[in-house]
Amino acid sequence: MTPLTSLKSLAASRSPFMALALMTVAVQLSFAAWYTLAKNFAVDGIGMTGAEVGLQETIREVPGFLAFLVIYVLLIMREQTLALLSLALLGVFVGITGYFPSVWGFYLTTIIMSVGYHYFETVNQSLQLQWLPKLEAPKLLGKLIAVAGVAQLAVYAIIALVWKTFDLSFEMAFALFGVMTLFIVIYLWRAFPYFKEHTPQHKQLVVRKRYWLYYALQFMSGARRQVFTVFAALLMVQKFGYDVHEVALLFLINTGFNIVFAPKIGALIGRFGERNALRLEYIGLIGVFISYAYVSNPMVAAGLYIVDHAFFAMAIAIKTYFQKIADPADFAGTAGFAFTINHIAAVLIPASFGLIWLASPSLVFLLGAGMAGISLSLSFLIPRHPVPGHETVLAPKAAAAE
Image 1 (cartoon, rainbow, N blue to C red):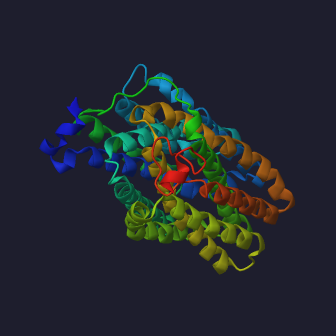
Image 2 (image 1 turned 120 degrees about the vertical axis):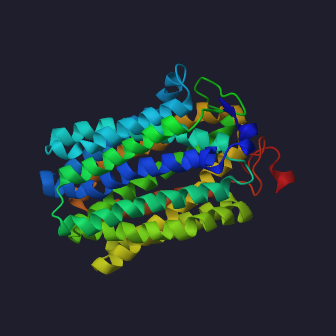
């Protein structure tokens, strides 16, 4: 066990930040590949309809909805151990996805892969808040997004370059990236020490009334994410006929933005505050979602898709807002509950909106614009300087602090 207070004696290559960075690479190698291939695998490889894709996305989000159960797993193992086991599960079931080319086979590999992904993301959020210094967290989180971007770039580049050139099959593509994730997990297990948390974490579910705005922002963030990940992607494939390598090219552009600008966005959030960053994001999303509803040009649609993705970097602000208002011992106990809150909408929206999609794709995006408007309203409740006891502008200390 290596205390965080003794990290200066560690080489940079074995620091907590480097561990987080390698975990970020590992999760992206599998999940970015799965995400890039999934819609085309569903439509071209299996012949699924929009309703079946919506149900599949709902199934994928069920483990996220049940993420609060992570806290009970942590009674028998450390967060760092659970992170590695979750990454291994993700790698294995992404790797075998192509060998189950049926609706029910895709459902099966999706839900088990999703357990690994969502349980990793739950403990990863907790580890980030514990391991990253509060003053440097926005900038370092931005760097982690850039690291994720580099990993995604590698995935998209490989798919874009070799899909047509070498007639790559879905089986080979999924397996390649699943195995790469497993190699990194083995390296993390063998090369890195266990880092002892600076503040011991509560080993039970933590739900506090004073965190209500954070929970609300998480809920709306889950709703916004589904409009992009499910229906904006489906718009590209189904309405405009984008092929696998063309979708991968869009992702390459999105990833390039993250690599270059995410660290800068993180630094700007640290400078100008969470509430301003979130207001900018939600105003932009309203315009993007309304435009999705009426777009008829494939190049304009691609531009909207790139802008939509660019706003994801602003989500750093929700994490750092919580880091500022929370008891440090609450990070692990709150992470699972917050992830569950985030995924309530994620479970409900894909299937229900999938049915709406069959009648009117435009209505799906107009409803998304309405959800972005609700998020914008919530962002006005974030104080200029959030701290414990002053979590919202409605808190007792609001008048003095504002």
